[in-house]
Length: 111
Length: 113
Image 1 (cartoon, each protein chain N blue to C red):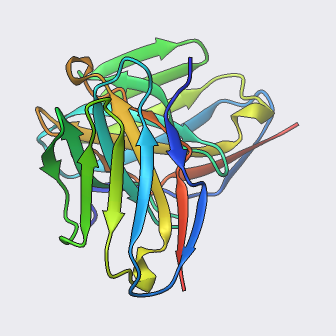
Image 2 (cartoon, each protein chain N blue to C red):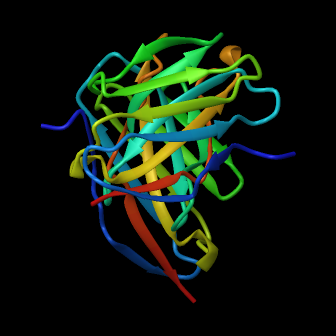
């Protein structure tokens, strides 16, 4: 079993849809959780960074962490074609610089 | 404000050769991490440099080595290249006290033939 599991998709939705992206993890020491967006031929771009369980909202993006279930989610409201990219979850434990990434979910938002 | 700059963007090498990749961190950042991203996979941590020292290392062999210079820029060296070393090599910079909000460069695509 991988330490971080992420459904690779691909996921295709119509413009304006709500998108739900998820990751599960097995290491209970993970405390810091990130979501990155990666466009083709580019490096990952940090979208959301959370520490505790609960929700964090930033514009159209909401990150959710459930440490009891070892489950994190990223919701995208009013999805746009420009949101088409690969979304990577990442996480690590306290004072640990070795971030563990999921394999990424490829999202396409169709006009 | 320039972000993280990596060079070269693409590179083709032969098995057994050595390669050096370069990274200039985002202005104001003092910490550099290197990641390897195979096709269709998430990035894997190679090592992190802070104050010109390797602070932490991932599960990579000694063929992978690095350096950080006084201006915070960094190099990744890979010796005795294998076909399996073909990947996108990403540099990420951060501020040591800034937590895990890394800024990534666009990467160097290395192909080993």
